[in-house]
Amino acid sequence: MELMYKNIFLGKIEITERESFWISGNFYPNPEASEFKSFFDALVCEDGFDESQFDEDLLDENNWYVCENGKIIGISYPAIYDDSEIGFR
Image 1 (tube, one colour):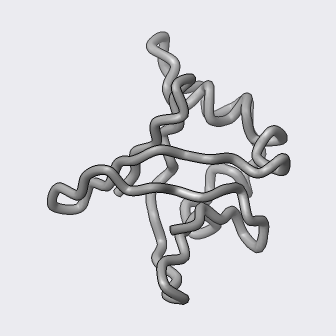
Image 2 (image 1 turned 90 degrees about the vertical axis):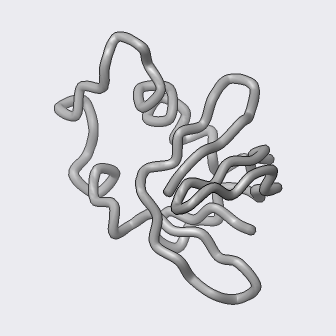
């Protein structure tokens, strides 16, 4: 499975669990993913997420999706943690 933002391939996802609509796994980022690090860090920040810090395109969930076996699936914002664990629905 591949994580995509618009037409940018951000990295591969190795799925470790599927529960209802929630999917989690390990994330293996491409170099392009480093441009999104501050956004990913803010999404999982325990102090809260301040949307005003980010571009409108980043906040548009229509721009986030995964590609699995050639099928494109829209997702919510991906939560990517420091240990490279990823979760989304």
